[in-house]
Amino acid sequence: MEEHYQVRTLSIDIGGSGIKVMILDSQGNPLGERLRLETPQPATPEAVINTIAKLIAEAGEFERVSVGFPGVVRRGVVETAANLNPSWIGFNLAAELSKILRKPVRVINDADMQGLGAITGKGVELVITLGTGFGSALFLDGKLVPNLEMGHHRFRKNQTYEEQLGRDALNRVGSKKWNRRIEKAIASLNKLFNYDYLYIGGGEATKVKIQLPANTKIIPNISGLIGGIALWRD
Ligand code: BGC
Image 1 (spheres, helix red, strand yellow):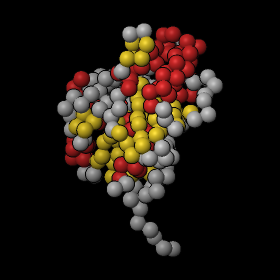
Image 2: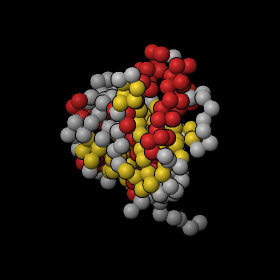
Image 3: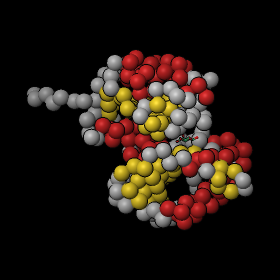
Image 4: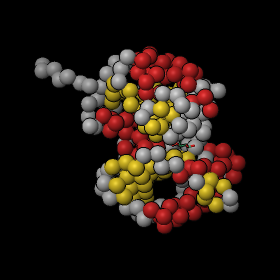
């Protein structure tokens, strides 16, 4: 049988509550199960990297690594980490992880990575993620506008999107009220961006129960990992 050389990508999704990994084949299809461990507390760089090492030990072989990080990342260096730990600020995650794993590593914002795993590549596409935090990503014809940080932007009642719609808010106000807020957020974002499509992802997206507009769709959380293949599309 003819053998094809496969470049396998280890995709890592670092979240405020869980860290997930999965190996993708050269086309971006999953090669194994998604593995998940709780995010360690405090979520310092060292603790998170130790958790990643535990997951990798179970994951299998790979040649390169893509990471979705829950904060602003520029050229591999973390600039914000609202839901992890302040010790991340200034940490060169791409370089440090690459040194440890001895593989090339690319790092991008988690919502940006989730968007890359979900969009069609046509027109203006906005992605929001509902999890511990509130993530956002904007694309024009498939090209990313990096590090759109809607989560920390003012939404209503003197609070940000993240304060009104993050997991803490959901637990505090309950699903009914949270869903009403989602409805208001969609209306507000639609007026601002006039997007062609809106995608809603993240661990809490399944709790969205409102009737969605025709151009709005819930995407599976696995797209946060699937999007990792797009980081190597040069
Ligand atoms: C961060 C974003 C991130 C989002 C979801 C926010 O608090 O600022 O960068 O995408 O949480 O994890």
